[in-house]
Image (cartoon, rainbow, N blue to C red):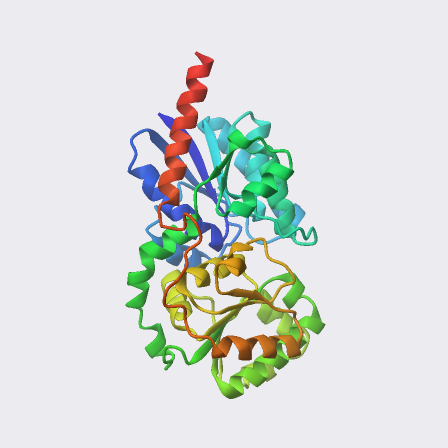
Amino acid sequence: MIKIICVCGARPNFMKIAPLMRVFHGNNHFETLLVHTGQHYDENMSKLFFDQLGIPKPDINLEVGSASHAVQTAQIMERFEPIVREYQPHYVLVVGDVNSTIACGLVAVKLGVRLIHVEAGLRSYDRTMPEEINRVLTDAISELLFVTEESAVGNLSQEGISADKIHFVGNVMIDTLLANREKACQSQVLSSLKLKPGEYVLVTLHRPSNVDDPRNLTAIIAALAEIQKEMKVVFPIHPRTRKNLKTIGREAEVSGMENLLLREPMGYLEFLCLMSSARVVMTDSGGIQEETTILGVPCMTLRENTERPVTITQGTNRLVHATTEDILDKYRQCRQLQHAEDVRYPKLWDGKAAQRIVRIIDEHFRSSDASQD
């Protein structure tokens, strides 16, 4: 029996861990312990994602909550270590690039437990992003690195990581999207918001470079003020973004925009439904760049770089400067585009990434076990 601790800590992790847990539970070679670090600590939202995605209730919740990067990472490590010591797993599996990823990875390797990183090798080459630091460090200490696109293989090779550790398997986020797309279409969210397909823009913003910088946030709001004169804008607003709007004195202005619909963060199925039918998606999220690529929906990414270049070369994504002028220019370009009817899926984005990952872990354990005999 192969014992694995699977870690999730933030909402983007939930979509990545869901297909893995499903495949693990269907394979009698594995025994899993699911640990939720509580990095995203909104109980209602976490429960909603777990319920909608069919993720089993976490065996353990570390309940870390919000804090500075250093404090949060330290608390996760402190609370995760006794779990690893007690459970004695063969592997610890982490996903993505949040603080939980590197914190639990460090604990595992310091205790001599092999580390698995799902979604390895992505690089923006922007070390001002906390996520980039987490990615680089996690990859450097991992035993098995599962990558989503071919550029990631090259990134890891350039960093001196042995080729036998790197496995190009596809994208578990897309496994989740394809498994839930039909269910999401049954959502009533469009009718509840009085929206028609193709007649609104969907916006998400949370990155510090956009929402913590008053100049950039002001420029984005000015662009949204113009866009909402032409088309409805749906904006599920991140708590950090709402707080910063209030700080710079723009909350009332945004709330008063007639065609801008401010909403609380949504469940996965509701958001997937909105994303599928949007005329344009405007975001600074990594995962949404991938999801819009599969959905064929034009995506504007308000960033200077992306660690997911395949969404530009093969997908519907384009990078946008955080200036009012560039946002409006790219929006008007995207608005003229039709949804891609013949979507060109990136290689191996076929809904079977989790199956490949579990098979390779099984083979790795057997071969390493045999070599120790």
